[in-house]
Image 1 (cartoon, rainbow, N blue to C red):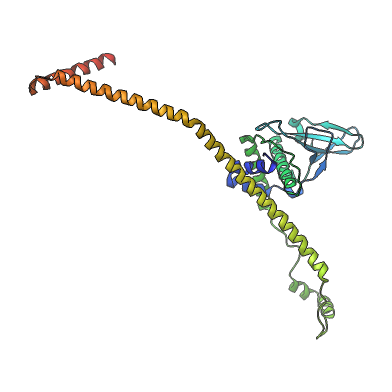
Image 2: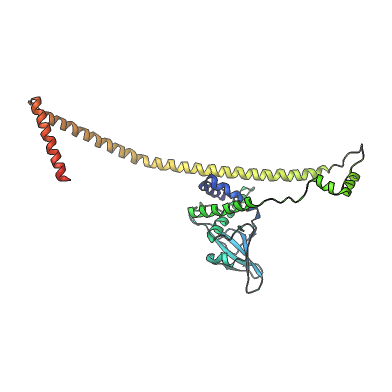
Amino acid sequence: MASASANLARLRKLLGEDGASTLTHAPLNRVVTAHQSYEPQAIPFMLLFGTVHDKSTGRPGQIWVLFYPPAEDDGAAAVEFHSYDAISDTSFRFDKQNICSVTTEVAPAFKTPKRSSKAKYEALAKYYFLEKLASMECQEGGTVELQVDIRIGQSLLDALKSVCIKFKKHAESQIPVRESRSMSATLLSDPDGVARLMSASPELGKPFVLLPPRIASRARDEIDHTDKVNALADLRTKEAEIDVATEDIEKEMETLQESRPKINEELQQLERELGIKREHKMEIAAQREDFFKDMSLAEAFELGREVERNRHKKRQRLS
């Protein structure tokens, strides 16, 4: 059955190993989602894209991205940019052609070093939706909102790879700033700090105060739980990739199996034609032998030379 996980695995496969590795630079952890029910054809959550100046109220309004799955396999999934006012329960759909110019501030998840094109924003939004939907499926009793294979064209792959490379280059260009000096430098420049540290140290023979086990284990449990969720999500993604590869192999085998009778029939026809040609050649050899019958070797040689001269003249006339 199709799912977001399967579509995500297929997307990674089509991007290739190098292209898929760039996806890690997209700020997926900064995606902001919200529930939506006013567009029944779209999935029930939307992504924050940015803000726009609302001329009617004079206040900044929010722009959200909605995802519309295709009605059938290999259909095109659509994304649309909406401004929704929960107070008045009204929405406005933006023309995608000018979404870049009307947006006053792009949300962190979509904020590239330089303003991107509409196609790149759409590609990034589709990737984010697949990741979020796949994450929902991995949860126990998770809902499978996407139940068809979406069309993944080369333009989508190129746009997604391009925008992720922008994120990657921007991250590599940032030089980390050291926010604190070393402990030794701090203490050397602050003699009073040394005294406070010494006074806070326990007396000889007295043990240090340990954190309550409950507090210490709570943080460790939270880390363990996060690791488990991430590990299970990775397993689900790998499983989906294997499912996609298996499905491709099965489809190819099925195609070959279907074409096997036709191939066998064509092979048999070629074998029959080859047999006929061989019979004709044997008949020609027998006829030639009849021509040379009762001839001397010299007469046969001279006749052969005359035949070759005639063949050469015929070829010249035809050319």
